[in-house]
Image (cartoon, rainbow, N blue to C red):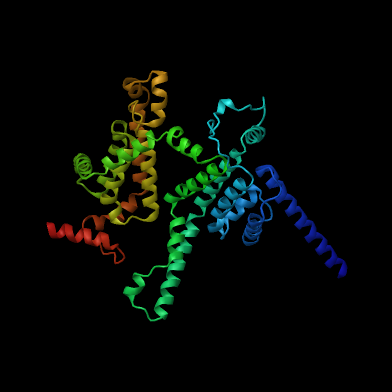
Length: 402
């Protein structure tokens, strides 16, 4: 018994020594100093205890990010910035060569990806921090669903506590839980990479300075393509454009008596092909808005709903190959390779049209029974008591107008 106890103490001591050596090695490698100011050292020890970090390896950080303590992960980067500044990383000179161009790295000849990454980290240690930011952003993305579920749980618990305290429904409605709102925000997929841009900003300022970050944002990053996409999607979602597209596709749907099936086939065929002329983002926006009205309002099953949106993504990607100026992959190679509209139509365009039509026909055959279930809703005779309120309101307003 004593021998087992002694063995456990020795094992525990060895584990603690390994942890200390790993932590010191991390600080020596990344910060260039094995020791830190007392306040920051104290903060580090507290974070390690709270998160259960045994060492600062990538595997440990990823495990923490995917655990239920994921909301504490941003603290690591605030702490990391403190490490760097405390270790003298925040100098006052402007870094004019940030980021280093790929051709300027002295990569080892014939080296594998591991040796190349190690060489680039040795040349610019910030590469390690930037990679960590990206890795944790990816981990945060996978943790979005559990974070959102946690937000709903906290919200319901908060509301139940208020009801037990005798509060009115009006008071409960106007007294949201801050913690629930916080979890809901960090669980929003659309906000995750924006959140981690802040971590990247802190890291850049910590390693270099504010001027380097400002120069990188203002003069190095190119915003032309994302700004173009936002503007195109905003224009495509305006009422005149959507109404015009609806009238055009309605003419085709009329050949099928304007049923849900006819609208579904018309939108998934014409909108993707229009992407070759009005750009793929615009085609995606118009198709999504029209599908929401002509298909998703009729409450398809989740399987059918996801299959349709997946088919739309594929069709838009394929349908943008009729011209040389709409699809980004084609646009990048069209000028160097001398591709024009005639070349695209002869070599890719007609194949894209056939591919889109065949894909739609196959999906229609697979989900034919699903369309039959939507038939009653389409004719305004739905007897489904679980139909969404939006559908019932839509049908009631249609009958009233008729």
